Length: 313
Image (cartoon, rainbow, N blue to C red; front, side):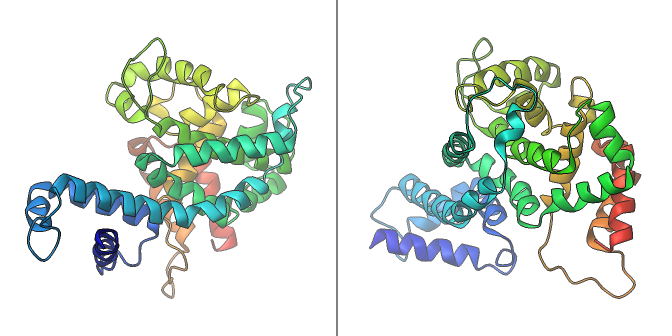
């Protein structure tokens, strides 16, 4: 009975007009913030006769959070197999021909990694951008244009980053990177740095520690994702921060940081008024004007802005 009442209460929260158009990955985060900010008032409300007078308020709040998490995980899990199934993991052995793991091994490793990582609310919230990028074939769209045009983004990815990948190989490489970047939000001890559970959020408060964090976290990740090159893991972790916090320039990380910033706020099937700029062009246009403030790479932004405008994206 209590579980049913909890579920009904959560449904009531999610049906709020300010939330019912938000996707579950975002809505969960908004509700959690609401609970944290109004914890005292909520505890009193939940103890009242019309709600859960026979349960400790803390237990009720934990049940609400568990119900929210369950809904979010149920929403995203069916798509994980499709996302992982779209990746050709042989790209991971391109720079290391002696690598012996096959596609099935990698697919299962990544599935296990995501399922475990999704226990963390920050991972779930920040995965919204990755979900949108995969669901809307964003990498395929933009990289196809960049490679056809031999545009600045193509130059940055292939020459500056010194990776002689084809269009298809780069799509696969960046898909792996986007999934791995979630590891930065998993709270756990970092060997040689901390004893308690920490995530990148803790290190962003002290940016000078980020370099050491990236190196230590990259080494730690081999236990979760054996066979994934350290260089890729490092780029994935760095893709969570902007230029000023990114030790050493890293083109795949800079590109992923921009895409994830854009598609964390993406609205599906957004209506565009007549005469208005297309959604991507508008976002990239605003971002390029404020590139230094948001720590974006302006050269990459300029290219994405032109590509989006030419294609009415």
